[in-house]
Length: 149
Image (cartoon, rainbow, N blue to C red; front, side, top):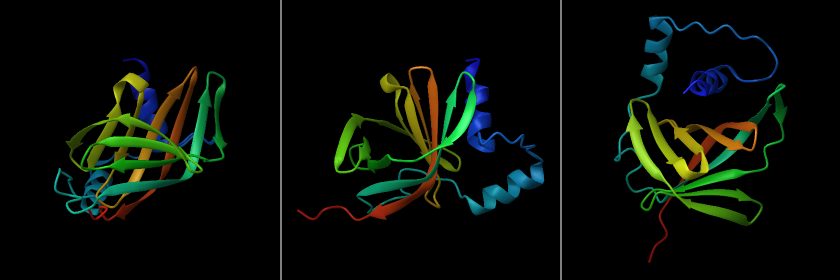
């Protein structure tokens, strides 16, 4: 559990080498909450999938963090909770678990140590661990209609 506060801080502040001071006053939290309403299983009703494209990735290693080149996009198939990580036309698929907490929908693959969090405004963060690295992706998701049968 010791690493969880570090990951939470990295999600909020970034890892670009600058020391960011976060003002977590109740006013700022209230303003953010008004812009990001609570989500539940009905938030994306009628949507087939969320296709998420990163605008940024931070690569954190034991010696520090640096901005990387985002090459992976994420797809969440909402009806089945299939969590895909794609590079080019090739995708790795995982059976995910969905949960909802306040302004966040959480899609996790516990056995693979990765999760994606998305707001009702379709902004997302994904955290992936790989050996001794933590990759933090940030970006926006597109809502894609379900395939017709």
